[in-house]
Amino acid sequence: MIGKGLNGRLENDASPHAALPLFWIALAAYLILSLSSIPPALAAQSGAPIPPERFSADYYKVYGTPNLTASLDRSRIYQGEATVLTMTLTNRGRITSFEINEEPAANKREEILAAQRELELEKQRTVAQDVFVLLRPENESAIDIKRSVAFPGNIREGQTSPRLEFPLEAFENALPGSYQLAALVNYTYQKDVAVKEDDDRPENPDVYYWYDSLSQTIPIELIVERRSGARFEVLNVTPATLRPGSEGNVVRIRVKNVGDDRATDLVARLRPESGLYVSVDESPISSLEPQEEAELLYKLDVSKDALPGKNYQLRILFQFSDSRRDDLTDWENAYLRIEEGGREWALAILLFLALLAAVLILAVRRSKKA
Image 1 (cartoon, rainbow, N blue to C red):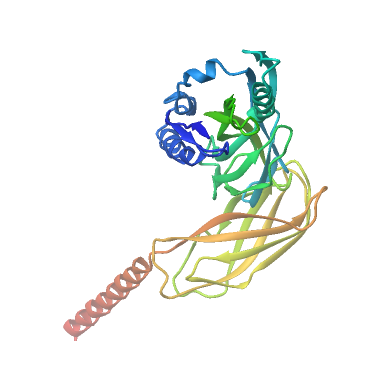
Image 2 (cartoon, helix red, strand yellow):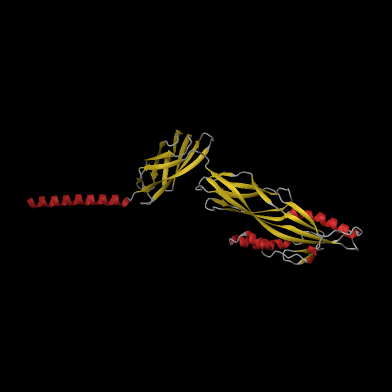
């Protein structure tokens, strides 16, 4: 049979998928246009085929298109969470109307069979074929989509696609709130069918297909939230500096619950940067109310090779429960500065030299008196 491809050329094939390999050419152009920030609708409209004359003289004209909607298995994730967003697409397209272009002759069996064949094939107009999905976040500094492409195949009217998985992560510094994603969906559909009767083989008429492409942008809302209403902030570190090579330093870190929920069974573990070594790394607190402060105590040793003048990071890992959940975790950073050791040595040397000079002067004066 002869079919009309996306490039406007007639192809001889009995299957409606004869022109579909050319979809991948359109798909590549769509991707290039998308990455170049050209609206996807332009990609769908450009190069639209002009139907052959036979399509204006076929038996029926059918109206309607596929219409895809998206749904998520979950629409909320936590700050710092790496998870898999699962999406399904449902085809809610429908045929809106039929129009009779030409009545088959009542005394011509070949025309009646051709019209019946065309009417049956026209029902496939709402099938979304070779569906391609590209998921994009509006704010890439808050959400990172690890794999953004999916190919659910063909989706018939009223049918739901297989589960499409998109691994993603909400960054730790993503502010709680609503974030917008866009599912860019591209597919082909059967725009029209024409069936030409054949006197020699009325049971097997020639079928002509015309395919077109469509694009949809489906908005998706994703909520990023904190795991807990309790939230911690480091107020100060005492002492703020330590000497290279010093041992048994007692460090006090003052923290505050700046959230709106109470933290209970709180254990704050210290994980210092290399160059600092902690001998007592846990500081338990039974309860910390909203806006309440507490002091964490740790004992630290400083490597003799620690860099003078450098700020060393102290990561505090919080394990706690709140009024809604148990076994919650959070973390904050504090910093300690390593003293400039050379200044102390220089001061000691100056004092020693001053003392030595005083002794020499005193000795000289005594020798003169003698």
